[in-house]
Length: 598
Image (cartoon, rainbow, N blue to C red; front, top):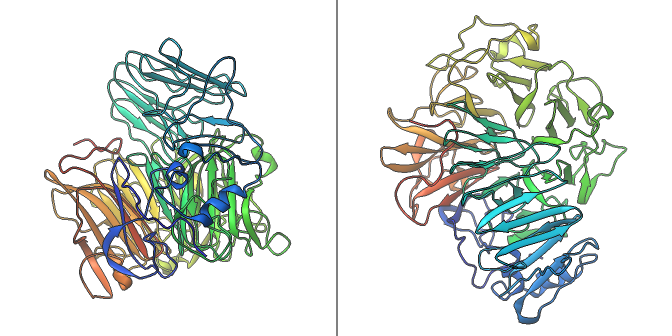
């Protein structure tokens, strides 16, 4: 069965979400299971309130919500106050939390989600104050401030510290996110994001981002643009952010990886409504990793190889409800900053010290350590990691400071940045040297015996984002260069030259890459071409994955996506499909990656 099919789904207010490619499991979220080589709108409602106020009318969906333990559904006047797992949406000491016209005030895991912008949440003397479990949300004269666990995030002079869909501009664990003089600072999962001198610094997916005087920020797969993020696994998709008060999922759910009751979900549904407040996600072949606002990592789906972090043969084989991924004792209460899902393994970077933890299948050395499938530290990597990506049999992390890249695991296609004749697999982190203007390493070729602390530092063109397909990788630099390496038999690299060496993708001269994404065997990027933005795809093109109006099996160089009905704002890829967020207007981008200034 499938949930949440739309009769009259509204477009998102910040843009429209389109998808194309393979769709045999319904992973495109278009309400059917027919492959599509042309971009078509995702059947997406703007919030859970739409699902309960008649915009989405589906008795199965309402039954699912009613069956959630401890939930209270008030269907009168189309208003809904939802509390999950026995928790309550609380109003204290004369304060009133009010949801109007089908809007939802939602509390999960003891936290309070307050909805404004057309909704009213306790107004006295123009100020709004809601306190639950020691958390305080204060609004004065249109300014928003969110404080959790006694820490403060302050906005003054008409500036706003904004929280959307579980991603919060907040301070936790004694860290503070401050915005002054018209600057914007967004920090998620309790990490710090600081912006000074009018710069904008955005940290998503639990990463730490600091921008001062032209320094770069790091983001990874599942980035947030315009407050929305899409992650795609082997046959399922998860959409979160924006005005969505809970993630939506669609596609293959046989092992519970989409949070449903099994089978296929042809249109996005709030199957993860009972999960903790999720701020970031990543997806493997048939499992998902969910990072919550308290820096805890959850998993659901297939665990037969230990990919959910619950051990291999001795653990549960399937997790149909989110299960907390147990961290090694050495990690203590650090919390998780960022995670990534490979085909059948996972990787996470801790919040305070940037330590790397891996689990799941390690046949190709992708765990970077000895030991079994249970979560364990990659002790040979001594530098703190701030970003991670994973493929079928390899893992990659980016370290703090100047930003050094380490890869380990399968090297049959040069994924570790070494010729395959030097080794078809590395079970310890292999550093990639500094990158010259043409993408070539500036250091002499380094053998597999080199240890993690011997690599060359990155040059003045730091890495902005890191992405991985099943067997190829992309990295985007601060200057807007996109480099690729790894498997190339289906055009995945979008260029000629040595496959194992990170080299620039063949985009036209003068075009600046704003964002990139990897599918299983295809790639995509958003470019600024003069005053226009274009969406480019290349690689495996079966099922119309590249959206280029071509019947070719693969595209060896980037080609514009055809029939895009509006200006593209962001691109997401995974498995055999691609998603694009489209602006409601033509013109200049409404976002820009930190460090990507002209």
